[in-house]
Length: 137
Image (cartoon, rainbow, N blue to C red):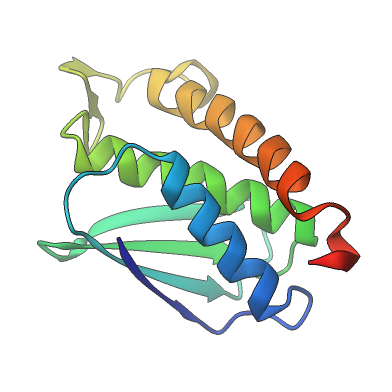
């Protein structure tokens, strides 16, 4: 797994964010060698992040709203890492998840989102156990 981080906000240290990336990618079941570009964006709406595969065939773009708390940045990172796994494993392509078209589903009812929410919670708990208090990271 290769990743690069662009425009990380000062609210989260480089060390903490890189440790979180490493933790999340290690938890994910990604066997392919994939390049992930992580960009912090100036999104001020409700959304935490997005994922996009249109950048390059072997690269995935993660965008994270930089106007979030450190905790929400980490939750968003872990959530999007799960989507990277879903894409890399061939389970998710656009709105098709494990062969099921989820385009018409309400956002909260989409099974790939539910999986990502579960993953983000587990990843966050295990990450906090790993690093202890945020100030020690």
